[in-house]
Image (cartoon, rainbow, N blue to C red; front, side, top):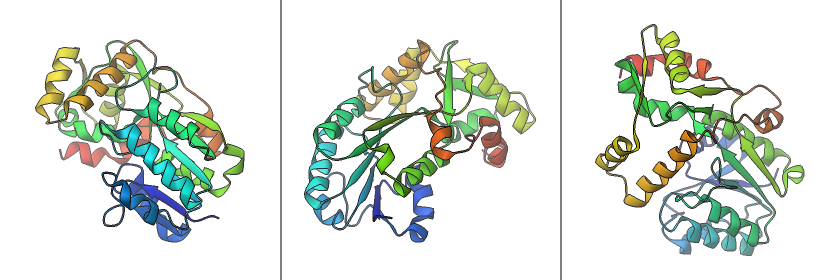
Length: 268
């Protein structure tokens, strides 16, 4: 296996890759040494790397930073880049820069694979207090959307790292095996927790206010609003077979996730 490096080692996916880093001789790229805000750190960090998982740090200059990373990767002789993108990036230009980042990677001349996951199940942990109190607030309207466990994304990355050649030039739409309306999502957590959970649809104005009050930058607020417009149109409801094919098993289900993390929701 070629030397494998990955960015954002403390993120939802990176945490699981970090847990296996010693076993697979992987190199987590984080501070000190690698800094998304300082392209001068890229070249040194990529010395001797054969495969890079590029999970970009969100920011208004995300696509430009990605382009600089890919240029450094090419100069360092990296043989394959796996880019984390987002659902819908192929036909909807989200404000968070992923569609442009995909284009920059394709133009880099590097062998690459693109992963477009849907919504992470782990995002529900950010709503633990509300769910514990009996509500699931989300800006989904009546639409359904697929969910994916970040651990399965990490496993898919490692499957590609183990044998990258068949995946060169491929783009994978990563979803779980089910879709959920807001009501179905709430019902799944209600069953796992043993108490009622009610879906509360957030109008866009309410979502905007919540995001702004949380202190997020304006560009990120707009990107998330754009993403939820995509959801409300029903465009995030499709289930794809790509994840199952990469894992060679069924993806984790939302019911499994809710049961495994029940204590986190009960104690919130």
